[in-house]
Length: 372
Image (cartoon, rainbow, N blue to C red; front, side, top):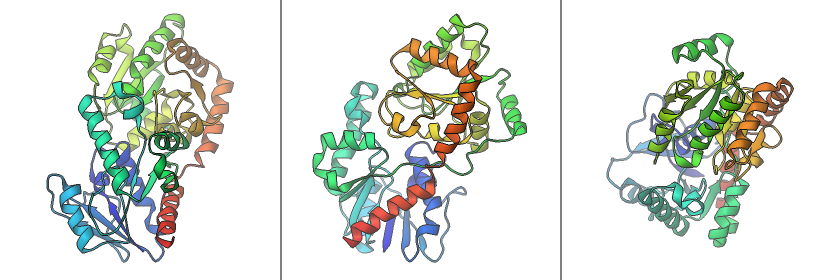
């Protein structure tokens, strides 16, 4: 079987979300190919960090970069040299092409939470999704929660939509005390801290996190923890940055931006007292598994996909209830027994989520579709 694969997202230095998914998937696939061949399509030469090089059953095709590449350049290649099946790690798939096409639908939050997106962002996402539904024969999503939401809108793809959980890199594991200290010193983090990791955008609920942190500081002045926020700017980020700037505890809130250095990111996760992900929704919530693998306790939302990922290995809160968030933060920061239990449970649960399992699941789905 020849599998065509859009690898552009793995060639981008700012890999978040679907980019990280693409990168890790390409790293995990080669040992599982057996007699299959992987053809990777790019619109630029591979960067130094690109996860694969050409070998016997891996080919990298660099196609001319052009506007609307997915609908202009790529279809011509799929027509002249069709693989048995084409897979996109995002919604971007060509309308044309003489092969079976498949894509990834992470979530459809732009339908469920329209006010959390810009008009243009919402319109673009809906157009991409509807085009993908019409032009693909096979679909991958990343949680049961996402699958349920998708099928409520598009019940006609029920037999074509498959769930495969994401994984965590084996490099994401608790780092040494020395590396933790080195990273904290670099970013001026003297006090213990609470960590948020993800994009800076409304759905991540960062404003309520800051309000809960303020309530925590007001009601428990003995807690000396700072709040550290890490992530690239998404859409509608200005109110979030203004909230950080105007908080009465602004000197205790550190926004570090996007960390390109993966080792530093892992060191921050490892040294955090708790990782908080109280999003209004998540297709999966990868930082949760990364924190669990680093033995860092997790505080997360009780909605969307998050409960099925966390299980009983973290504390779940109502993401709309600032007091609930603050009280559970206090519990995690002050109760050593609960922290120890969640650290152990989290490390064990993280073993279920590996990129090898993700790659194997997707390959099996592609192969079975070809056979059937």
